[in-house]
Amino acid sequence: MKKEELFNYRKLSDGELKSYQDNGYLIIKGIIKPEGVKQMQQECMVAWNKEKESFDPNKSWLQNSLLVNIHHQASTVRDYYFEGPLVDIASQIIGPNVKGATSQLTFKMKGNTKPFGWHQDNGYGELEPYNAITTLTALDDTDRGNGCLWLIPGSHKQGQIRVQQDADQKKSQSEIIVEADDKLAVPIEMKAGDTLLFNCWMLHKSDGNYSNDRDRRILFLRYADADAVEVYNERKPRLGRLVKGKTKFEEVKAFEAEL
Image (cartoon, rainbow, N blue to C red; front, top):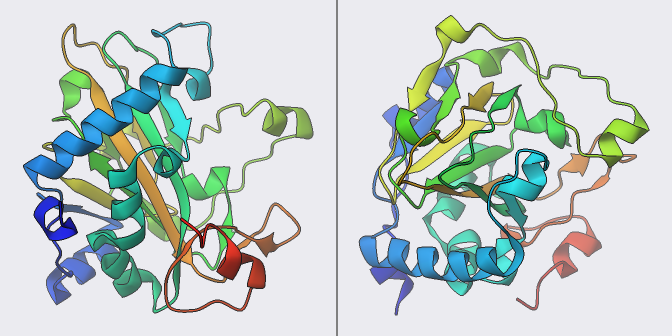
């Protein structure tokens, strides 16, 4: 099936770009068509069921809720990540040279009541320049009943929040939780096929999924400047597939070029 039959290709209007800059986030409705959602759900669940079991409160967030590099296992996700509508949209925000920085499933299946506290995505993987964007594409309708995301509009304007972690904490992939005012938070409710974009400094969290019969399945894709470096890793280039433009780093040019 052609990509145009799965995805809605479009660019952001001037008004949408201004809203993103002012508020730090934007919801794009229906960026994936129903057939695309169906294919992604099927492919992602095959991968998920190979590696994951039912929710265990004694396991970490990573063990319960994340499956990294999903584009290696799901061809529709790979097409969406590398050649879908988010690439041009990311370029409007980041600039002409863009790479994929992260692809993973962020699933809160029914019964996974574990919350995830306030944090910035750039707190977990600090990239410079500071214009990376997170995209969360809903594979299910997501609302307060099944653990939707909450964020604080405008919170990206405070910049990078420095969080100290020692080597053992980093190795154990412990959660990074920062202080935030819950009264300022807004719930981000989406329909399957919608996408949320937000700034790398956006403060966000999610509650547990207390639904008895609804999963909350999200595809998490992150895009960055093609020359972005990992501040925490001796400023080495972040490896990621070059999806638009060019890069000065040979290792980025070569990374996943065969996919």
